[in-house]
Amino acid sequence: MKVAAATFPKAFAIRFKDLRLWSVGSFVRSGWQWPEEYIQPLSAVLCRRIEEVNRRQCSIEDLLLVTLHFDGTMEPRRNRGNQKDFKGRLFFAFASDIVYSKIDVRNGAIGIVPPEIDRVAVSSEYPVYKVSLDTALPAYIKLLFRTSYFRRALNSMISGASGRKRVQPEQIEAIKVPLPPLPIQQAIVERWEKAEAEILAAETTLQKIRDSLNAVLYEHYDAHCKKDILKSRWLVVRWAEMSRWDVKTARASAFRVANSSFIPLGEFAEEATELVRPWEEPEKEWPVYGVNNKQGVFFSHYQKGKDFNAPYKRICKDGFFHNPTRSSVGSLGIVPDVPDDAITSPEYQVWKIRQGLIPGYVAVLISTPFFVNLIQFHRVGAVKQRLYVENLLEICVPVLPIEEQGKIAQARETALRHIARVEEKVAGVKREVEEMILGIRPVPGTIGLQKANA
Image (cartoon, rainbow, N blue to C red):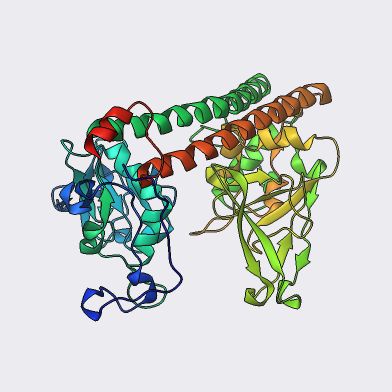
């Protein structure tokens, strides 16, 4: 195997007949450092699957639709059977098939249908491929997709109008990639899967803390509530107990009345909106944070002040914010250690604990299924339901003694420190795996095989 590092000259020359697209990025080739016989186009191991869904024979209710995230993972979408939302053609993808987004593949939206899912349906914007298992492992191909070299190749192929740029199937199929013997692919995959197992085990510790608190909350609920308001299909509420005239408010009112010992969050928390006008410092790089239901609060990107066109909201350590339109799926989080100038979208709802509750405990509380269940009927709006801070503060919860809150908060901190250590280790493994795929690092356990084929 070659071990020379890839080089990327700042200046180069190329013949006109060798161009694929008229852009500087399309001139660049990825520097795989493998013997030539291992470098093949993806079409050698990927076969386009085109199996259109017959909408007359298969209703929307019978289909599993998925969302393809930028990290390559797939998540089932909520399907309410509204055919008006799916007017275009749909296509089947099966377990271990590769699916990518023509528009967002450059951001990482390329992945594999998990083996535990038999079949999903995707739109025509998501080409589907099956893998030739005699020459490639789906898990290896997935790792290959995550490498910076593959991502650079994708970005060199983008074409189309601004905002709707796409990577077409024939372009994906033409990308040349390293396809070493299956034992080498398997060794690379096993190296990564071992690291993944470690991070999963670390995250499980935090999940157990959440599950334990969730069980405690339901115990309080079962002990104090004579009628199960959360699941009941009918309710009786007095007019005087209603703050708004809608079914969700009726359920919230019934819950509050049935659990009189529960206390509204408004007794402990308050809105914490502080607007920042980044454009007043046009050359400053502002750290922008987001929130989702997987990571909670996370760093998103840096953005120059001149590129903002609306005020943003300042965030501070141990404060909280949530996405008002996705709070019902758990997009809430506590702010970790962040720079003093950290900001978030003006659409997000920012709040803080004022008294009586420990922020670390609240961070676990808002992530429990019990709390997310309460969010469902505290949102307002018709089509696009939202949870504003004022709605959040109306949610009533049982309040645990401060000592119990402290134990939960401390357990969370211990789990987070452990996760951070494991993540640092996994980041190193990720770099190693990418170097193995690139061909500049030997693959453990296959040295003899690599030399024999070099």
